[in-house]
Image (tube, rainbow, N blue to C red):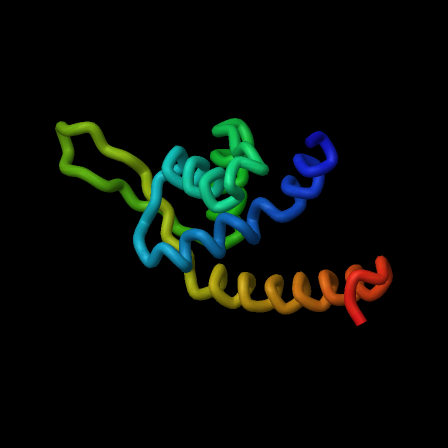
Length: 112
């Protein structure tokens, strides 16, 4: 399981962008973490200590933007939305991921 966690750490940004774009709606950090765990069918755990710093870095990098959901005076949540740059980055990284995966499958003799 530790090896899976190490592999996941290098792909967290990709996973978050894909989730946000697929969902088509703003999501808050805790919601993102739980949705990623569901998508992985429990293979990966996404703790808040990983998700929030990554979301903040993604915001600084211009991949997502945040906005406050809810009215003032009520409990508000910060939600995240992919930017145009985030969508471009996702497309590029998915292309690289597919090429890498295919190369590894060939290398390991898993495909022809």
